[in-house]
Length: 227
Image (cartoon, rainbow, N blue to C red; front, top):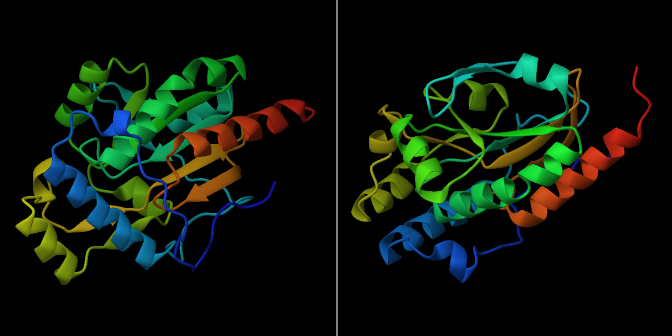
């Protein structure tokens, strides 16, 4: 499989959430999220972001409802889609999570599983799941340790921090820590050995189009002979 990561280059394609996906969000929230996604596109894919054919680190994280989830157990049982978002408060990330939820039946039919990872504390993912009736495990990466191990974290520069604060967004509130860092949105497909078979990294890596790309990757995996 080809690596989808545009390593070291800014992402040029912009995919805006649909009007339906933006419903329920304040105009201020939408403007704030566009500021973040614009900055992430300028930053480009982090140099250390994991790529296709590299082993993914295993992790243990709490799910929104408090259950501990071990990635090793999940991916040994079936191929695993792992999606990283920077917050359920984000219009872009929320649209991506809804798209992933909409594909859960097709993912299950491919004998695979999907999980999402956010730096937020459990209350916000739990409320998001309840409000949108999502059948999707959302895990809390409370110290960004897993996001760091995948090479996805960037430090928010002072100028962007100041503009976000002016917009009323203090990242310490949803994240529960004072360090101004964000994980780059990303979606990975891991095989049963934990090897990355498809990697999409960038602000548009959690869209419905990306979900379709991951489903195609699962079909390719299903066609391979099992060891």
